[in-house]
Amino acid sequence: MTRRIAGTVGTHWINVMIGTKKYKSRIGPLIWSTVWIIVLGTFYVTAKPTFSDPTASRIMVLALIWIPPLAILIGIMFGVRYIISSDELTIKICHITHRKIPVDRILSIKRSFDPTSSPANALKRLSIKYKEGEILISPSNERSFIEHLLEINSNIKLINLGSDYG
Image (cartoon, rainbow, N blue to C red):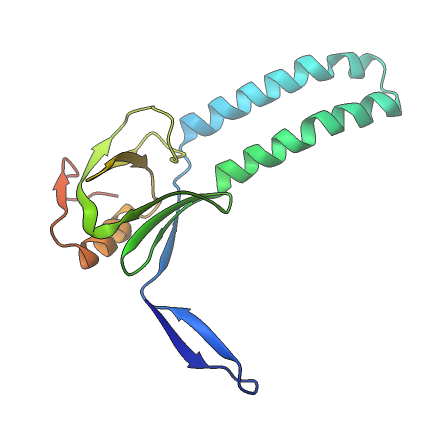
């Protein structure tokens, strides 16, 4: 739901999203450390010849090889967001929309530790089942995230979350 309000300068209008909130993905230590061990190990193997002969051209080639993948990795690790608007859950990875789920189509939310590839940076995850499928996510503030979804769709079933989810 979008509402227009008057801006402070002239006749400009500002669109304000009502009820929209962004939630970051939790970053779990196991996934974080595994990714960085692989990255640093691979970096060491590819950079080892440069340590014995640190010429400028070798260092430049090494930087050109490693800067893009590191930028992508950092973007993925810190760029996963879950955005709840008045009627939709949008999952974004580095400003790219991964999936849009109408909140009224969500059937249940349950705890999961499934390591399957998903837009979740931690193994402590929520499995969101909706009419068209299922997705694993890991919002850092689970309680607020779930309460926000329940405000929109009170028919969502909570399964195996315990009394103190989050």
